[in-house]
Length: 624
Ligand SMILES: Nc1nc2c(ncn2[C@@H]2O[C@H](COP(=O)(O)OP(=O)(O)OP(=O)(O)O)[C@@H](O)[C@H]2O)c(=O)[nH]1
Ligand SMILES: [Mg+2]
Image (tube, rainbow, N blue to C red):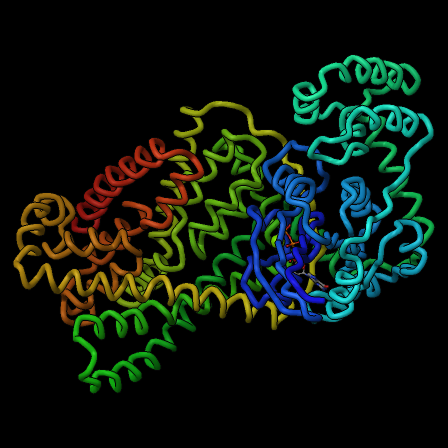
């Protein structure tokens, strides 16, 4: 007994793999009600039944061909890394579509357990599934689960342990396909992948497998071509379609056999779906949702600053902390956190409800103006939280060109830290309408820039094909957990940087370097932008993290009551420049990795120029 067990979670997008992963490992994988969140595999461990269980959360895929990066990650992991057990997570409320993938997982012949997740949702919709019968049809254990409450997960792990080392049965398709597979698999033994799977993939014209077999067993390919021709002749369809149709028909048959549905009337979620996607109501709702998001954050954040302020007052007495470090921590706590926490909370509520794909649908026409389609709006909304996941999220775009375009555009979305700067500086001291005006101006610029990029990287966006998950009442504990995780992550990453920035600023002061730096930059900062000279160092250090601009500003000015030192135009210009000028370092790295370093540098350069140009114009316009 005992030892290490490697268990991979595989399944279609948005079925609940990451919730299961988080429940089992206590880690914080991104969760939300839209397909395509997990883009890289993640790993975590737990101890169960005397085993150390390594769990791998794979990206969601509709199938296991090698069309997308996610599909390749998932299929290579199962086929080549050979986990001890694969847990195929299935959405019980849409069984037939999910079984299409289950069959492909079984084709890979790894020991498999099916988690029949979202069991609660299926029940609520009047769907009954005969679990025993499903087990018989698939030949593997099936465990109903409700990931968000953790129900069934214990049983799932028990079945996983029983299943290790056992060979799963594989699905059998129509007689004609099977006959060909049987002949081919005899020639395909001894390669890395299971022979039966290779045979099927060869028949369905999988280019990657064809290349692999072409190198190892070139003589097989002529037989394969002949077989494909035969299939095409008898079925009148391309072999790819023939094999896929075999899977669809088997999935459909199994689903029909094991499932009974009690018809339900129009549900509230259907009605909500209608009003949030029909053109007449979709736009006003979208505008209302976004505006209330900011309004609530502003109100709640404003109320909470006093709490942190008084806390800060008490901490001031602690002399054992170095002053510059203390200043950084206090400033972070009092100016940034009160806005960031409610913002994360609302964003997660929105994400978990299933509204984002509808918003994406509504935004399709506007996004087309930038050569993108509506799907790019999902990472864009995530960008309001943090631009790093937003940038990675652009992988849901279908082509490389669209991914690049989307990544450049979404990393310009003001993140929670930038919002803290805008709300804490402009919103608080000039007024909320001024803050909203800055946002509107900023989005106008982003749109114009997107359009310009579209001219530079021409091409037609592919049509919007996106699954619409049903609306769901957000699961509060999950949302709270997500918010907590994000806030902790923020503290872990931000606080050390904030302290570092503050210490750096004090050191620069001590050595007199601030003065020199500010003087060098003053033609720009003072002459053109109309800001006080110290804005130079503040903006420079602000690229570590955007909220630093506000925090360092408070340190440099010696007060968080900004309006006593800065004029209204100055605060507006500083806010505008903060949004535009540069992505923070982490975002820059993410952008570089996704679109290439040269492009990332160009983008950064362009943004600085734009910030200086627009900031100067704004200063002049406001000072008239
Ligand atoms: N009611 C209910 N909701 C669930 C259950 N499991 C997951 N969810 C919700 O389903 C949504 C998707 O869950 P995720 O874990 O992010 O899905 P995923 O399979 O990792 O998705 P991708 O990473 O996009 O492939 C979230 O909104 C969850 O809160 C469940 O058993 N019951
Ligand atoms: Mg996931």
